[in-house]
Image (cartoon, rainbow, N blue to C red):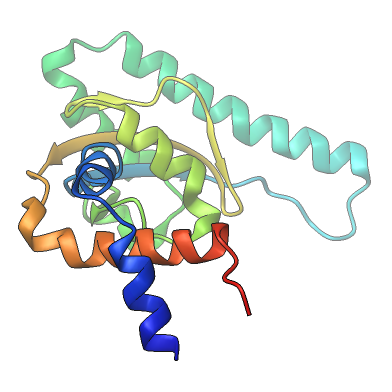
Length: 175
């Protein structure tokens, strides 16, 4: 039966594996703000025109990053907010400093993978120093804050479920 298989797989998972997964994969939520610049591409443009618009949008993000680099680290948060108001093309977050709220690795869909990965590499109070690309356009992000990660006892069941399904997909069971 399926339940017997699941129980068998669950028994294959050691506390050590659970702890390793917890240490490596489980992270606290982080608060991220972003500035979005989109390429003003239209369907009737030539490939050259489209490339030029992409390059223009990317350069705008690079220019914003250059300005942030010139800013005193204590004032970066305010400067970032100012740039959000001035430049961002994400109307949904424009009014609140570009905030995407508190996110975790799986909060946003996979099209944001580059943005999420970059955000988790930053420390609180840092911004991205290279252009981040998503299907929406080009971004610069600012990591504002972070929360403690959940206690192991609170996420243990979901870790076991994840590791169980990984075990099942990596170890085809005999018929």
